[in-house]
Image (cartoon, rainbow, N blue to C red; front, side, top):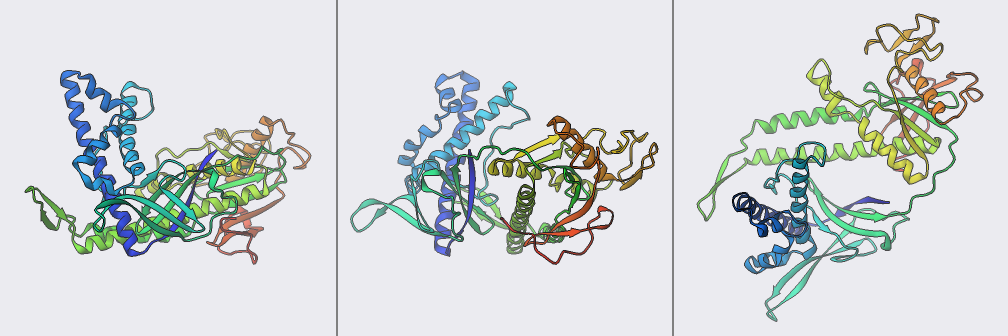
Length: 466
């Protein structure tokens, strides 16, 4: 199975400027080929020229234009051939996806490719063959950039640049499992993304199982086959980051995006933002990068902890789809919800560790009593976090009841008896809450009512990234 290994790079100012130049040239090539593609598209519409269709709609038609463009624009020789080739293939893939969308061969609406702004998004450098154009010696990564003219001998020579990995590679890393390398930049930070291929371990026998009910008040509430109820707290630290992002974005949007006119040699005019806008935009990009990294660490830490304790994790099939009374609520429930990413992280962690991930149908689990099986008439409003069954009088915590019903459905599907380990059809013996504090998961045992309180256990449960 293929997956990505993302490593941060230590890059000095000179090397950063060189990599930025490589990205600019690749971005220029993409836009130039798109300009040619637009002309070919118009020509094909008017004349049905098969030569235009062959260049425009085949996988390697645009890529085959690169040798001629190198003769016309010699500065393209300064970039490695793999990077240039993949810039063209990237555009060809976008055009073919557009064609598939028009023919109804893929879901969703796909638009014709648009010109890319390098200032808005850095164009990544892709070396798509194993160890062609790059080499790794210890923690030093050497990249081949292309050819430049040596004034002493009057001939072109290969240019290389070296960067250093900020952290050591994992123990399982081997050169023979690397398939490709992509250099990316987020804010002011460079990354090397290795695509590696590893054999996944065989799936183990299922022992301990937990069923998790995903929510918005918390990330999820789970009940396992030993009768332990666990509430997973939302990442509390993201609220402060979101407030800071809103503040900086508000300040930036008050500045002038088009402040300084720039007249080009061909007579065209473009606009450069004000210095304050550029400064605030750089701060905003860094805040977004920090938020992405913290979210990733949070989800992976929770997933690792779950699969350290359990052989199988099953999550309810709930998916946010609109709703919410206020703008703030809709933003939290739809735009900033982590439920989808949490499921993807669990699925990958299960495959990597040889364990099981699955989903169970949530329909009716909240309003169905886990003790007697009767359903509350009219459902239960979202603001009611606890409710009493009108048939048997049993008092339920809303999320815990849904997780218990989900666990029963999972055990029935897996043909595992519900009795025995739980001491009856359904029972919860103990409750606890997990909270991520930046260093790992802290367990809060005996939390009243299954709620996450503002305190932490005296011991640290799991290290980040373990």
